[in-house]
Amino acid sequence: QVQLQQSGPGLVKPSQTLSLTCAISGDSVSRNSVAWNWIRQSPSRGLEWLGRTYYRSKWYNDYALSVKGRITIDPDTSKNLFSLHLNSVTPEDTALYYCARDPRTRGDHFDYWGQGTLVTVSS
Amino acid sequence: QSVLTQPPSVSGAPGQRVTISCTGSSSNIGAGYDVHWYQHLPGTAPKLLIYGNTNRPSGVPDRFSGSKSGTSASLAITGLQAEDEADYYCQSYDSSLSTVVFGGGTKLTVL
Image (cartoon, rainbow over all chains, first blue to last red; front, side):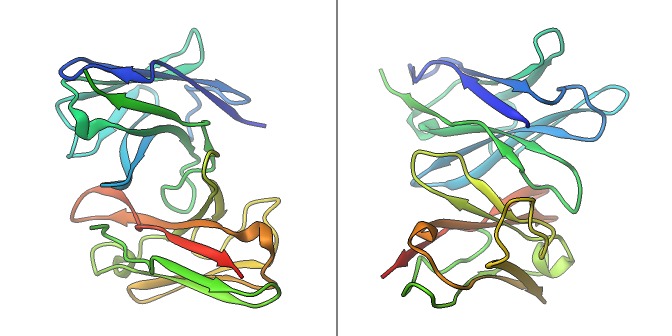
C-alpha cells in the first residue's frame, strides 16, 4: 500500500520560500512508470496542479505556467521523497497543499494523496 | 473560474440516484483527454473514484460510475448513502493550457 506523508511549516512570511516534503512508502520516487506531483487547493483558485517530477532514465520536471519561475520540485532518492519549493510567496499562495502520485495510466490522474498541509502566507 | 464546469451542488434522498456533470471544451474533454473523478471529505485527502472516464479503482463500490460524451462527462451515484455526502471533483488535461485541470467541485447533500 502506497502512503505519502507530508511535512513542512504551516506559516511562511511574504517574499520567503515555501518548502514542503512528501515522504513515500510502498513505492519508489525513481520508479520509471509513475510521476510525483504537487497540487494545492484554495477558495479562490480551487484545485490547482502545480507540477511534477518523474524519472525516465533521467529526471524530468513539468510545472504549471501559473507558478513557473517560482517553483522547483526535487526528488531525493536517498530518502525516497520529493520536495516542493515555491519562492517569493504572497498571500495568494495561501492554500492547502497536497502531494500525489500519478500512475501514468489512462491519462494523468492521482491515485494516492498525502494528508495535506495548510500553508498560510502572512507576516 | 474553473476550466471544467460542475454544478455547485446536488442533493438526493437515501437510495436515490444522482448525477454530477462536468462540462469542458474542445481543448480538454472534447479533445479526447480522459476524465477522472475524486471524492473529497473536508480534512481528508481526496480519493480517486473513477479514472479513464469509466474505470473504478479497487475498493470503490460499483454504485459509482462514470461516463463521457463529446465535451462533457458525468459521475453517477446510485443507492445514495449518508456516507456519500462529500465534495466531488472532475479532472482532465487541457492542451491549450498544457496542464492538468480540475472542475470547481460539486457538494453532494444526502437529504
